[in-house]
Length: 335
Ligand code: TRP
Image (cartoon, rainbow, N blue to C red; front, side):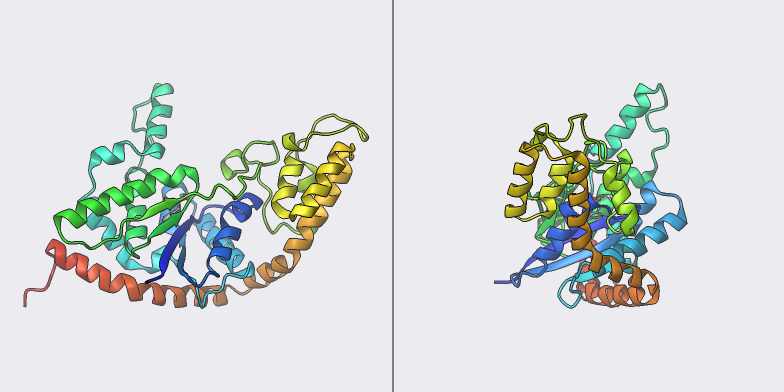
């Protein structure tokens, strides 16, 4: 049996935070160690251009995300780790898919619909500020996925619709031209925690409530001290289920340590003490990777080299598949 192929992309617009680590990076790296799978992970820098028109930020984020995955121990001799923009076949495929994707399907994409709705509520033209990039975002994502014949695509809930659209487009092309593409499946892992941020809402860059993954030690301590708590005094029992401090604790601690902290909450641990212990737990776990991260950021030439080698491996798949696709749709040599 051939190996399950898992593929996922990371948009390069921000600095990786604890929520990204717990919800996406840690499970992806763990999964890539399984011998029965083949993993493709990439920096979605063309997707970054949709939301971000600041070149310095796109560059910096690409570097930080690559350094993060490498520092956390991604084994690039197993996983294929590359940058979307190093694979010209993806953008070529995007156009061919664009010509086979129903506009009506794209009209239903959540991100586009949300933008239109916000405009309507503000009394603006419905398409105010909407670029063709935003509108066609799911087609570029379909090309990312179909280009490598991915079987499963681990994503957050907000991305399920995009994977379904990729499936739809693949079916249409397979039916009309030739069975070129594997039909991908979105995989949402209910066992991984969706981490809460400083204010108790989901930790997300768009809420501005994140704790960056590799903050220097002092700043990490400060950030943890800013996590919102209630006014209960030391000695008063605290509800772990209702606490961001406890929720983050549980995402880093093992079962025994989680049970111990639960008892401490019930016994009325002071918030300051709980936060101190949380800092120590996270800091001890992340310190070695943080050191490696700093080292990698100071050596961007090395990161570049790793990504280039990943792209060469990725293109072993994308070049022949794109040739087949071109042939199938009628773009081919005359003699
Ligand atoms: N759109 C995804 C996100 O914002 C990132 C992404 C781009 C992706 N291409 C992909 C994820 C292909 C999975 C597969 O999270």
